[in-house]
Length: 226
Image (cartoon, rainbow, N blue to C red; front, side):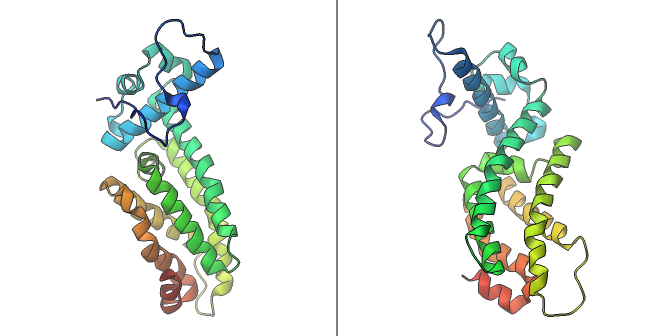
């Protein structure tokens, strides 16, 4: 199965345009970048259609309208292009989340803002969102390791909320990782069900879920309601 890169998509940069055949006089570095970006875009489109386990190199090159030789010029395996796409996605998402978190002064609002920004960004690119949340568990140990590292980066932002707790038993050391893992699973299930455009509707429930261990149910519900 292959998936052609959509023509005229406003979210795709000009460098994804299919190049003319034969001599075209375009700079070699532009051609190389164009081919690599088209391959990654085709890979993501296939992941969205059939999941990582259904992706083949043949499908990727057909969707990208490039040759098999071109694929091997940039990547050795499907796992290689998967890791490249995942790393790119994390690099782009990281500043979105951190910037939103730092846009507020109070910790509960920081968490809500970060969740809102993440959901908005993921909803805009559901194919990439599926790769970042649902596919790392079936795409091999290296991608799983990178996914764990990405989750670990966010732990410190949640751990700051421990100062908000009024008392009671201290949270387990792994609490933040568990909360973030659960959020990831909720988003991933939504994407696997084909409801990527509805991700932003998860904001109130996710906010309440994340904040409740720190603020208590009533206060978490108030913040979640906005």
